[in-house]
Image 1 (cartoon, rainbow, N blue to C red):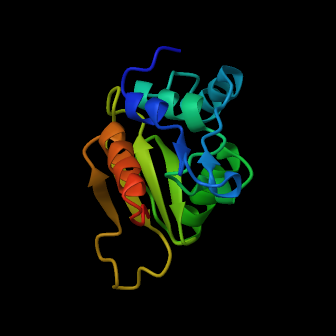
Image 2 (cartoon, helix red, strand yellow):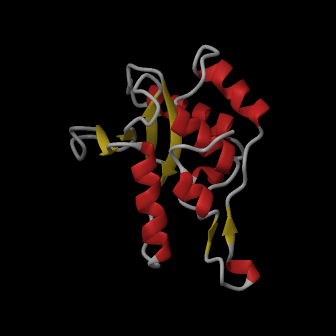
Length: 161
């Protein structure tokens, strides 16, 4: 797959590349067959936006700038987020794909109908009893800019979450 939107992720496949081996965090790619299976299940067999496909291709099993590896697979992440949204009567109302989890109460996701490099949104589904009146909000204008920012913060030793 030719990488067009996530070249920065491709060029920076590892957090702490000069650290001792136990402190290196290296992205793990996802095979195209698995990406296509996710597309069938979550996007009516249509291809995902290009930037999302690139993310999965480069780091779909593990990505050091996201916390989706808390669960066993991307499919499990999608199921967890959808179950959580239903449990708290939340509805995104559009086809989406979760790209990150945060503290068990929030997910970051992209809408699958926003073009090749979609915006990133956050949805707080638990504990929103007035604390988060706007439970669903835009985090970044594009997936590529969101990933770029997290990589750069990681390089500076800052908290990327």
